[in-house]
Length: 133
Image (cartoon, rainbow, N blue to C red; front, side, top):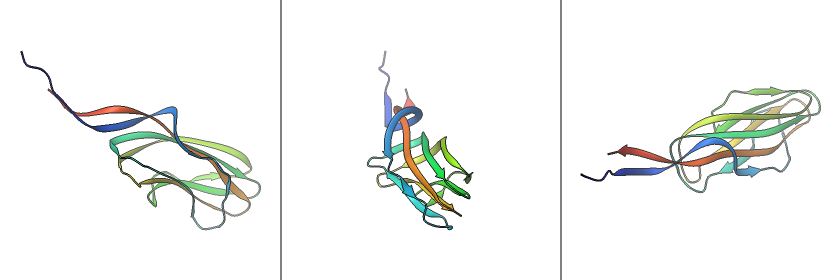
């Protein structure tokens, strides 16, 4: 009887309420054009397909603001419009092959006073296998 073998290709992540990284400081949305407001950069590879939970708070004190989640300067989420008060946002995003120095970013624009704070990424590492024998 032979022993089974497992090929381990690296970790992947599933969306949970476990905090991985945060960039909580309040940052004013400076412009009516889309601008990168906040960024979290990975310091290790996340192999294969991973799902991470992304959250932030958007505060608008007049007018409206529009916010989109990006990966390395490319939009990965839909634009979300905010008006009046503090609004929390949370969504799960699927990522493929996040590498060292890749970043998840918050880009935003506004037509009046607005800011972003409490940008957080949540998930839990799980083993990822390419084959089981």
